[in-house]
Image 1 (cartoon, helix red, strand yellow):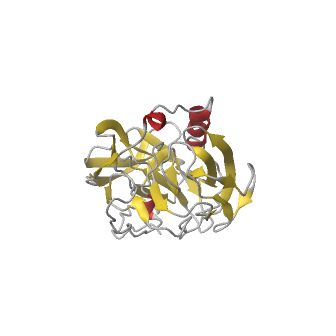
Image 2 (cartoon, rainbow, N blue to C red):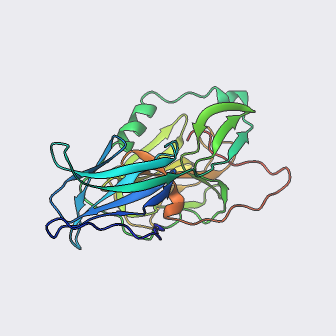
Image 3 (cartoon, rainbow, N blue to C red):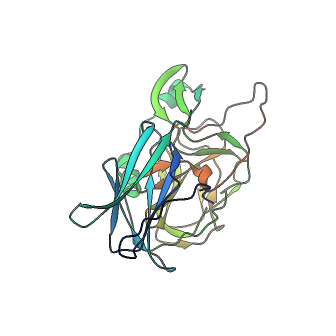
Length: 282
């Protein structure tokens, strides 16, 4: 469940409301933008998101804050169809102080290239925003294992900076253990890729998506509608991976965000000389 402990603002405009929660968010976080007026979108630092009518009334949109967003003060604006600002709220982005992680990988893995069309297929999925909402909170962890690598970790490969950061969670899990959907949605990708390995991607609707990598085998098909907790595949070590584990991530309006906002996991206890099970593709 999203942990929005701070109370958002509500400003009245002819009996209409505009709320943004929380008002202070870490890098990799998500802002909830609610409105009772006719606005269809919101904007922050040049990024525009859609607002969707909700069953309980009003409209809701999720504004992602990228892991690399510069800490500081920003303005979230409610905008009309012409891009004009109707109302605004001041928010603060805090430094998440993401740690650095060095991964030791073989030369063979370091040279692994994406399959033809792999990068394009995953990018197209991440940029999809569908109208129907399938997801409800709370979300559920896809496997029961502990956390081996958190979101936002700055990655080094064999001691050399990659310029990348970890876009999801890595969870320890035995080979062929079941992987379950974190929320209801439509399965968009069921593919074997060189870099991501066995990959499933689910569209949960209204800008929320999840992706699951390195699977050994699949238990669903593209186009299937799944419910939270349905088995969609099995843990493996395919693609750029050093040991059986699950890398999974949550995307909001095309931006990787911290899954900890929906699912709380415990870090694995440190073990001497234990192999690091970390995803190298995301």
